[in-house]
Length: 428
Image 1 (cartoon, one colour):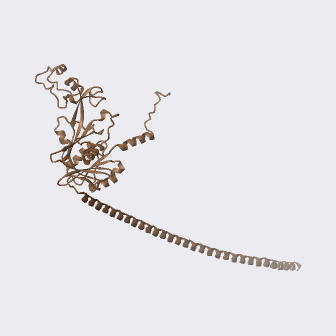
Image 2 (cartoon, helix red, strand yellow):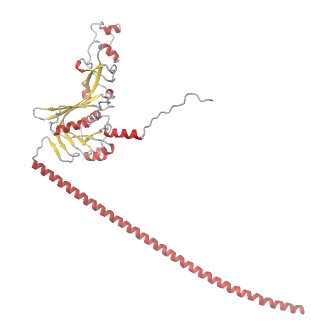
Image 3 (cartoon, rainbow, N blue to C red):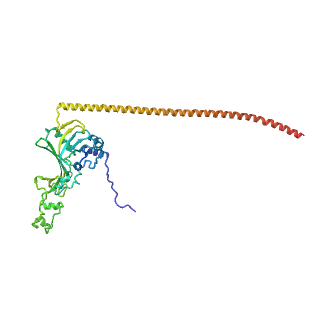
């Protein structure tokens, strides 16, 4: 029977080594984060950790679970055992005591570490309860958010403010304007620096979703385009709904809180955007819908390394140059003593290892000597037994030779006499 149908066309689904190398190099540049809690925390803090992980999506460990027995591990230990093997670049650790809630942001593996005090926070579920039409966040976590830093100053800003801005920006992937796709820009993370009357600086963190609505058409037609089915129980025809000639008490023409009316928010889309009616080269109104959580944090101190280095900035403790120098010298002394103890420990370990190796070698040599002595004894016994066997064989050969000689003489003598006697008998 002939074969039916066309020949199957094979599709090349795998990539070459060069493509894999390029992808791995690009992925290595993407910052990845780990959001954890250290020590005992309230359930609200655990919910806050989950909300912050949603902000950092998709390049974060969303299902990471801290072991209850190891929550007191330092950031340095986390960096060695978790971050470096997984390629994580930033750690965000929440810790709580009876008086305050702290947030530490560290750059792995060498720091620096920024310590913030969380003055106020609101969970995402609390923010969404205040909204009439909350946004579905399940489809927003596939792409990273756009980072906006506001009021952080210019080149003349203090060093700690510059460091905050750079840290907030580097926690998220950079956007390449030349090849960015509008469909991937779905969220915004805002870091807004506020200075109060007491010169205290606080950073307000907000998380928004970008919502686009097409403009230039009737509002009711736009509702139909967006598949928002209106209430038509008080009109006779769809034309009455469009023309607005229905029942006087109908509210189908009421404006929605999700429909933008400000002309300043209207932009012309260069590409197609998410949502019905948002086509390229058309005008749409953009609106930010808050997703949560909300955070109000204040920078307390900046440390070198991952929480174990020198303090470069402190909001409450100010030291003179002499005190700073003394502290630096004391830390260097402690580090030097620690290095000396470590070297001494390494020497002791090496000495014990050599002694153990020598002991093992001596034991192996004694065992070898015993085996050789046993083999020599066996060889000696075998040689003695072989000599005894040879002597016995020689004696046996001598006896056989002697008996053979005697036996050859005896038969001739006796045979001759018998013959003579036989002759005599015959003669008789």
